[in-house]
Image 1 (tube, one colour):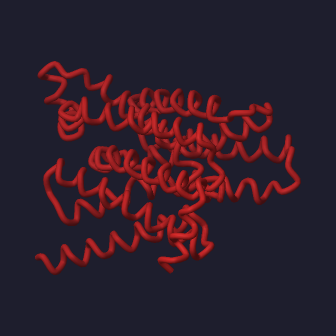
Image 2 (tube, rainbow, N blue to C red):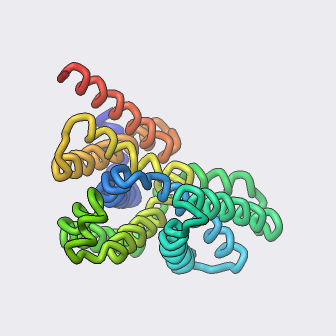
Length: 277
């Protein structure tokens, strides 16, 4: 098995996939802890459905680089979702359900009405559950992903104290002068960027697992915010690398394999917590 992995690592596209997958896993795990603690875990699921709808529109319009269209639309919907969630008539969970289901339905409807592919079912399935497109990345796409990942990590480190305060007590943060709405908006925008980056890796239906499972696993072992965040990042990177290597060697779907490894690690952490008690 080690010899097989070494042979695959000789190909540039495999190395590109591992680098991009690692960066995406790192970025998604950093804010996953915040989303879980704020009871806003399904924002990733909602925005992933929005990204699916945007990709369908980009396909209908024959946009050559769909990321230039999908990312602004997803960021805009993240802002809209945050604003709508504060409406007294439309609560946060209802807003997520409304936007995510609507975008998913419209995207699939457009793909059926204006289909340009002979294999519509295959295209939809690969978009929803991930595909081998992670193994066809160009050097320019790798550099773009690396640049966006550096920006995400830098923003998290730079505003770590503010994100920590907003996560645990918005009322106190607002009372001491922290611009809570601005930092919530920053979190939503960063999550939208991560969603778009992760679609090629795990597909739009599995992105939430990439965000939530490492955070929940780390919470089984640690209690402080910093320890949980560091552990979540480490677990996410290890699970992503292990899942991609298993997928490459075994020929299994990339996204599903990564999520399966995340689930196994979660149960392992739960068992460790049980024996620790």
